[in-house]
Amino acid sequence: GAVVSQHPSRVICKSGTSVKIECRSLDFQATTMFWYRQFPKKSLMLMATSNEGSKATYEQGVEKDKFLINHASLTLSTLTVTSAHPEDSSFYICSAQIGNTIYFGEGSWLTVV
Amino acid sequence: GDSVTQMEGPVTLSEEAFLTINCTYTATGYPSLFWYVQYPGEGLQLLLKATKADDKGSNKGFEATYRKETTSFHLEKGSVQVSDSAVYFCALSVGTGNQFYFGTGTSLTVIP
Image (tube, rainbow over all chains, first blue to last red; front, side):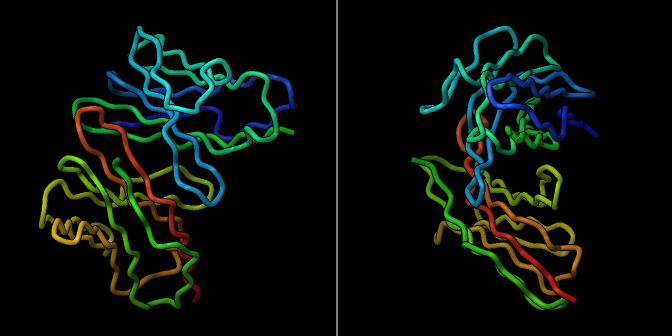
């Protein structure tokens, strides 16, 4: 079946550096990809919606200059957390859409030290 | 706006106990409803779903019925196992955007 892969699954970075998380649809072309962030003891929150070849649509309150989303192809979207700070430590998860079906990636645990 | 309210955890049950995790929703349109499960250290997995009123989703012994009259989609399992220990998220999707709205998640621990 369709699979969405995220990489890396876990990453530790130093405060002030940038880190990139990739989301790939492995056996289908995704018309739209979504990025979510999971806060501790809170729900998953939609960060942005990404369509191939166009700028991502960010949810209110999400800093687009801090969370850079690039959707270069129908199978790859990337989330770059720029100038990361400890409060950016979180679980980030993507999903990819084909038709009316959504598939989630495995998620990426980011720890900023 | 669209939202999901989910029973807060954590929930601790003994093996073979009955499980209910409550979920209610608010939606402006006609949502599809989902339960996702997140096992320790893993990503989200779709557990079950229902796309219209009175539909029952079921998988791995879990069930949930789409109740429009009570705007609910409670998750149930008759006999839980240790391997069911995970965080369960209720979610809805409505409209053409295919965006999901998640509940806060309920952590379940099943002890032998």
